[in-house]
Length: 560
Image 1 (tube, rainbow, N blue to C red):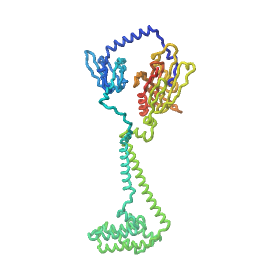
Image 2: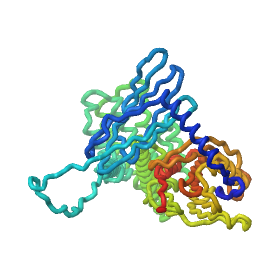
Image 3: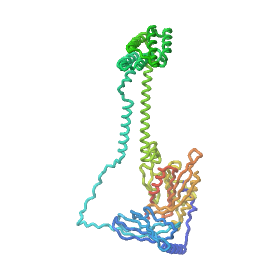
């Protein structure tokens, strides 16, 4: 565990009073001289009313090449920063005067101190003086202003947001798609004339074709070629369906030869007169279509009547279909119906998939494709981030922190040789192999004799020892960055952060992760407080969790 270290690294260094006094005197004088030359602070008023704004000024005189970083965020607690103004730059001889202003306020009456502010000039840190502010309550003349009881709590319905608009849009889209599918696929449409004709038996279809030929104006318009084309097509189509399945593409000689073979093979009992009539009409039609012959109109009408009679003769000599043929015909119809149904199902499924893709793309464009995918498939880190968070205190003095779940106590084993010198308590959530891991620990050193001070613990050495402990646990390639860190309530500490490689379970591989180690030392006791967070690289939800946890850290003082 990251809090397993040796006590010998944190020995108390005693100084005699004279040495300490000289050191402090030198430090104060040096700091005052440097500070007076570089930085000055002021406020426009030392006494304000509740909620009234005061202007806090920081003036820094620097060279043109110096980089200056002013305080950002809520570093003025217990006062609240409500506005940060732009930096005003003025040239003063060969140097620059930078003026940074902040708008501060407080909503409770009392006496407050604006804490020292940290300013970075180049690679050096400077601190301003603390300033006192009095916040006065607003006096109310009860003789002119009546006093009223506090109004009771009124329950207000939680706003539903506009998710229902999105839901209505999806429902509307589904209704439109369903209506289109029903109208074009599943609805029983009225049959067209061609479809009704196609459903008729071949004999009735042939008779209907002859009646339509009578209703045409081919003969009145002397369109003999068209007349004979439709006439021979009618008998050929009938023969193709009932006698010979290649009648439509066969020439006249081929068709007549085939019909004679069928007659000789006793497959169909056609008379010689029928075969002769058919051959005569087919050849006359060929002359009309290919030799531009023009037979008499009355002969054309006679050929029409002959074809009508021959269709009857062919029907009479056709054998009755056997039960097996009827079953095959019914099976064919059933297969055809099943194919149609399958086609409808495929098209409906395809439409549903397209709708889902459209909805996914729409939500992806609005909310992000990763977020939509994680919402549909589920993501552990996302559920942690959007779940019910818990704010609690851990250890003594307490570390006040917000976490996705309550941390469980997991005190590390302490070697017997140093057990009497320190006391450690730890609280954890998850493991290094999980998407997110957090460990909060407090270590109290039980020194004897002279009371230890904050400087007795070197946080950089503690951080190095903690990282060494991680490496002993199998973690490799730890990249280290360090910076000072101040909590929202003004506690100062050290932040060590970077990347590392975490071993996979039951595997020789590693996955890359990020870590942040925050360490603080109490002012009144030799107490080390540490917060370690580890999460997988590339997990945006885990990164947001770590940021939220770090920004929630507050260190509370215990009563003396």
